[in-house]
Length: 443
Image (cartoon, rainbow, N blue to C red; front, side, top):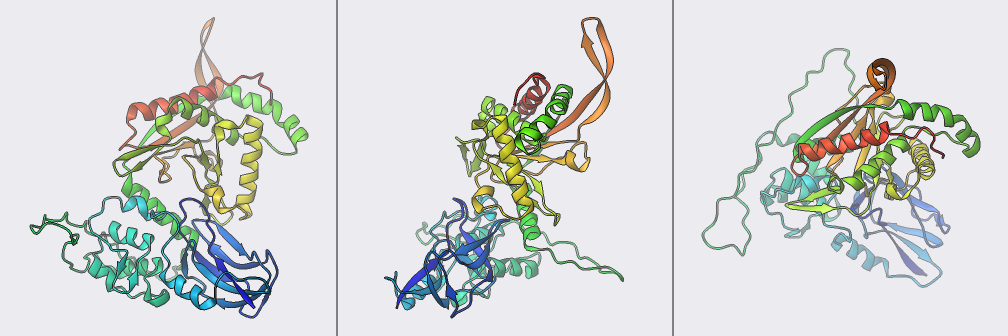
């Protein structure tokens, strides 16, 4: 009986690991081809891992809640065909495997850019994943301190859960450790830059009648990502009020015929995305990321659209190559992503690769907001509610007061690489595209 190694699949170019949330098959179960063997969770998306072969599950190499690197063997399936490798060799390779994905871990990679300590990939018999090393660097944990953290992974490996749990109880002062210096450094040591003091959260008093609600996995990820973004990027926000009367009147004119013809609604979101894509082509230095002291100028214009889930959490599906789609294509793509986001049916790659993000705070009746940048992007725009206001307009007969449809655009950007001139001109250009809408446009 041959054996097949089931590996953790690649789930996007920047995804280095995933958490096993549930085994759907148990040892001894018969598995058909394409049967889902287990459920996994990565940054905001839950997925299933199907079997590419028929056979029987003979070994599980990880348990539920274990964090597994992309490319590692997670289970052994016996088959009638030629196998890939014996189970014994698979288990040994699993223990020794290093990530096949990028060395940059998802959320802490940007936070750990300013390395104040040196963390080895291997220390003694222990292997440290890129994510664990990034967290240690960002939090100022020295090698000796990291080595002392108990590990719950295979062979005592420290997992992300282990190091985050340790940080919760670490207190405001890290364990004393000598400044980390590379072994090849010159004999005369250069004083290391002191690690920033950890900021202890204020103690919370629980009063009678209070209810304690533990954050779910997605809320924990969002909280971590938002704190990291504010820590990493100096945020500046510019505001513009746009007159979108022509746009509103046009949509009111075409929405019924469009829904009857296409079987779906046309919302303002694809219109906003079209305007953003045009403005990004005009100002390509908004479509960038920061890698240390390097600026990565993105070729593709991939616009994420923040969507609220029924649970109250947030997810950001991405419209890839938005500048290559016409308004009809954008409408269908936006509706599809939004519908599947609400049903938790997005694929991992559909929330990866965004280069700019749009969030619609107006859908909650808010006039404006100051959104937090979705790292590793450098800018994000919030669109507010469209409201009727009296406004002064210029006519051939002179200035007049009229009822107009107005909305605020809020543009938050990373002041390390985007100055006020670029940030302000960009949001003004988006407003121009919306204000100059052709009321006779066909779709």
